[in-house]
Image (cartoon, helix red, strand yellow):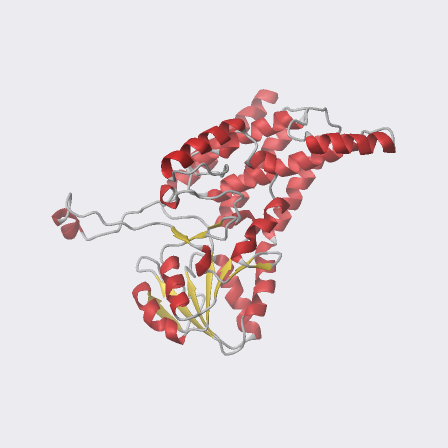
Length: 374
């Protein structure tokens, strides 16, 4: 029976990895996050462990394998770290509940707070409590879109001209604009990529090309974008063309609001953003591609790194936050023991900083070194 469950987990992980690899275009973050969290929940339910340390090793090992399939998709890594924090918190509470007296409880509270990186004690009913915690995380993830829409609608007023990007691929922006239209009368200007089909189900007043965004920005009052990943320093990853729109908005003093669910907020920094920028085929005509083969290299990034100074506010499922204050909500979803306390990771990070930046900087998590091997 145990071997059958193990085979099911391996098969589920292989199916998840194959789906990520075969996807020609980037899947919506919510769909990918749901698939990853489903796998992690089955991992928590069927794997054998009797203490938190063993479970963390299992989570980190499987998380490393999934992350390696698509290193630029930080949602996968974020969810593994979020489940690890739930495991630590539930293990800590279960250990404290085993105390026989109030004095012992306070004593163990002090000791475990200083040494909670090991958590080697056996835990009672830990599995069911952990599964309940993961279910709560799943519920929060499923209601993210509604909460973002509810909070973000306060930023838009009647008569605004709103420029959006990646409307067809972002269901969050679609829900956001649909709810706003029910409350305010506004005009929507959608930046359309040449390879992106028109969405006839969602009527928009103006469809423009990316090259026209700079000239149209003089008439725009608000810009709404959807983030792929947000980092603690306030920088973010946006769909291709997002940074150009932000630069145009900055030139015309137009506020930029970036929608971001909690599972897109990463607890680590990027020492060198160029490492994770993935390029796709530009789709040149055959005759032109044959003529320029070996002479010209056309770069078409699949994602773009955007500095924190180009974003006015981040709209999350819990609050509206300034880019320079993103780090304050990191501890709500991640534990520092999973992010910073690995000796192997700190050694690799020091080498990376020395090579790339020439600095002896504190340990941050680069995409080339997997922090889940802690």
